[in-house]
Image (cartoon, rainbow, N blue to C red):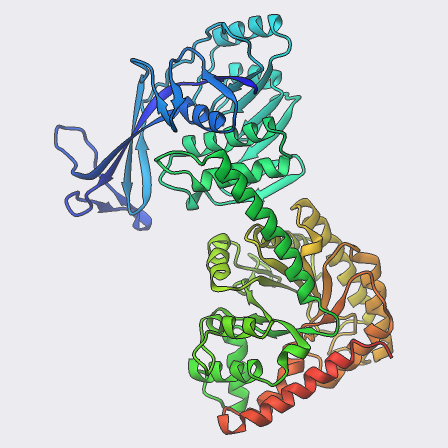
Length: 602
């Protein structure tokens, strides 16, 4: 058991849940509510008061639960019987946290208490400087004197955003540094773990999380839990990746009543590892040999154009009936491993009353969801980027509860004079990588779709060159974001001349060029490659798929993920009239059979 001496200030947080009916809230700019706290003797009614010990006691509780022999320097506070027992006259600072609609703001003294140095009596293996500490030059002097006499003692430091010279000197001595700010202008020689409201980065490992999902706790408390848990897990011999996962889980599952027990953290880590294995299995299932992925995720604008051309009313009922044709096609599960849904479709029901997600899952088909929110022009540019990163973790959490297990995000690139620019490629590939990382942290398989738009005037060589550059940039970004490629699928265009180019590419040219680009620019560790049809005709997409197959085998599974190339014959047969539904299903089934056959080498 390691002896850990915690450096920090003990204080008390008083949570007051305001009575929103009796307090006169004003509305400021941007619709933000505010309350005039003039402290002129008038009272502000509150419904509930909760007092908790905070500051260095948070690290004391966490490290004690993790099995360390932890004490706070100069304090008699202890962790006994699952709670903090403070010493007499421990509290020097009280913070008032006001809560309204599950959001908090807090009032703190303008001057923080300095943290004094007190020479330890007992042996110390580690000194842990908590975020609550305020370091002074006198403290540094005392610490240096102690370390000179105790050479085996190692130092862990939480570096504040607004570092003083004393803080910088402390960081330079540390073996491990936690920080929620940038360590610019500071020399540091130990390992660094960077914390923020959205991610935890430690060396080569990164985990996406959201502080918004945590209980009503201040950032001081949340970050103290993160740092102390990660440090405690490392003391127990956990890997860096497991340690930051335990830190995230503790921050998200702690409450004002206390932090999670070691047993609970071990249980959550085991579940996370099991879910990671499940995610790998989902990726493998989606790439089942001989099966494809149906793209039934047309946005409102896309399906409106389809229906308008056929004079079909564009309402929710007709959109449900249209998708229902595909999902109820006989033997669908023989040819399709997964279906990409649109948000509206994922919430609609099949004829038997089950939601479409449950209906597909019962057939052994994995249900997925389009999560990007469409294209937007860059400022002062005709090039586009894809929206949807804001709020994505929360949306994925809901989709996971609905039974969806994979996602898709599309970025579009047009070939033309000066296009795509390096800026557009970098920005879109970086966003694809961030999306993929968020998906994997949400226990879902990401499909990344960088599409070179077919509707253009360019040669097959231009298509090959641009696609190659995009793929290189994308996989560089995926690697930077630490995306697990064995649990990630690439959805990509075939290599062919643009639709407006006067000389169409032959199927043989498409097969050879596509195979060559993929072999050179797609890592072997990827879970699989699926092709989009991208505006090709029904027959053209199938013939080109056959030629790509003929140029195999490849290091990864290859299949189709078509929308129009599978659906158009069915749409023409249906025409918005459910009396034609069976004819439409058969037309769809024939396209499934043809494309499944194209996955066999000829």
